[in-house]
Length: 529
Image (cartoon, rainbow, N blue to C red; front, side, top):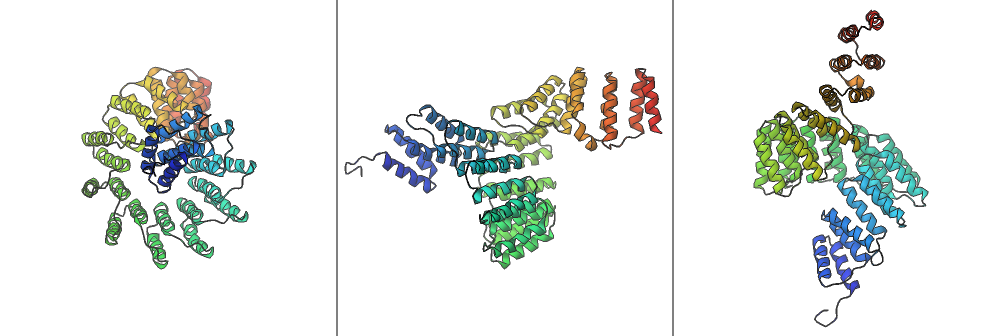
């Protein structure tokens, strides 16, 4: 075309970009767009939507968001449309950033762009992936209120939200509603329902869906089998694995790597090391090559069983086979070293992981923070926490409570309260370990006000807290001179059916006697009998 003196116009360039996109050649599409920019060819919204889609596919989420923002700034030239916003929503959904996904949806509506069914489904998917069934149901109702008809993706995604929040009955209700409204379930719908039952340990209901699928003219596939194999592990019924494998063989379903990984994982979850290796050998004999997920399952599973040498052997095999290392494998390897108290090896692996461009996740940081906590290095723990902040990785309650433990050991009590405020701002719920770490810090800082406020929030956790810890809290309040708070906690213990024995009464009587509360002392003493 160019040799004949005919210069390509924007339509031609968009056709080429579409071809790259449809052929899943995302990097080539991005490179072609860079060539267009170098030739000063002005793109339109269609062009930029293709580029955003490709950026999301190759994981360049930040660049995709930057492109959206530039389109919003140059609205007169390339205004973002529903496809643009939906692509960015999908990007945040993939990254697990539900709040940002909802923010883009709200931005789209505020800027006068009407969401379509794909937009609603993207937001539904973001909520469903986190088991946020209440929010997912709200969006499902909203799309109907706005005149859109839920499609099979909408129903399946809502079903999945209930499945991930351990509500298989609700998932079944959505499935039945889908049929009632003349929306035929597809294979993905059935597999999602199988997963909902399997995740809840309802194996009988899960496997019965194979027959229901066949009656509905939808043959089960290897995904159905993989889901059932995973369910065996969750139900802790190792004998059911053979039932699932027989069902697959009867239907002529050949196992793929995902199915084998599910089976290996289920065997290891039972602690059946020999069966897991036997199934692994069957996989190899069937010419199904292991992948990074296989090795991660083996390494992490063996680590949990205390077979550290064997787990490291599989890591060496993985390296020999030149299978690319993933962050999950690195995390499992680090956990293995940490549990063997090999801090130097864990640190070395952690550094190599980052140097190789494989960014740590919450699990990796959790393992390293626990290792440093065990070694009493609060400065290293705090540095990791700050590194997480810098990498926009939100810590969970487990990391925060481990960090608090390390800070208390290092006499950094002010930092514990600083972390408490951080958790509040980020809506991270305090776990039991965090509660006691905060109370310990308050005790050292003589911050009775904060301590009393924290104890007030323990109501729902009282039945699960040991008598020894509750007695410690009562004694803490008594020593602080907070007699009324001490008695209030005691009455809560009684009303929550916590075991109140002689040791608890002794704590109360000792503290009441110390402050001269004779009437209350007599009242409590009479309560012993």
